[in-house]
Image (tube, rainbow, N blue to C red; front, side):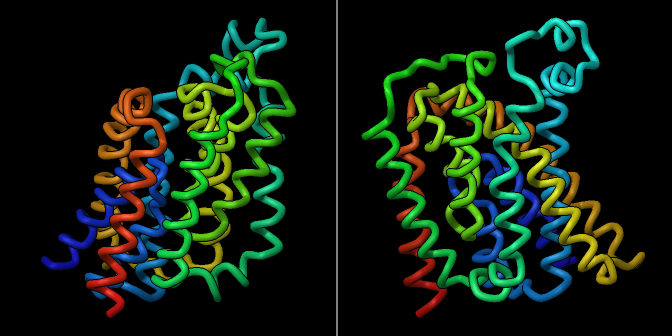
Length: 266
């Protein structure tokens, strides 16, 4: 029964944190250490529940994905609106760098200590972005330029350090290139899907042997919980971001880092 509590807790953590600028990977690693849920099975489980979170984005942004793929009338008439080239420009830098450094990242950066460092540095970067953000010249996704999309993709590379936060890096990057908060968040969610599918697929190929029929219900529990919680978290986050900005989430990161430093690592 304890295994299923782990599945529920980790599923909730993944769903809540995957698209918030607080680092889902960092939270999962720290929570795993706290519950003594580590090793190959834990790593495979994290891949499965990430797929649940991805599905939530696909459902919520279904119309926009249909437009991007040209499978809707709006998409075929989109003209200069957001298109697949924007998505490609934003994901290529992190995909290339992640592929080249995959082994190094897994071997040296997936530890509680490095996660705490990532939480703090990522939080400082988010505060910097709020303080030094560019005047808003992009107030919706269809105004986003290719240069802005590529620049956001470069900022996304920072999230290869676990604890930094992919959404934190991309939303902060969006502010620094002139997008408003909602546009930066919406674009962050859209590019999360191909990025996470690629990363999860690559990890799954390397760890599928850890899957067994005995664990089917365990993995399914985490997947479903992550999917449901992510649906609620994304909608709530878009509303909160206009009120709280990134600074509030940065302070939360500092508190989490301090608590885990005191109670988990000492």
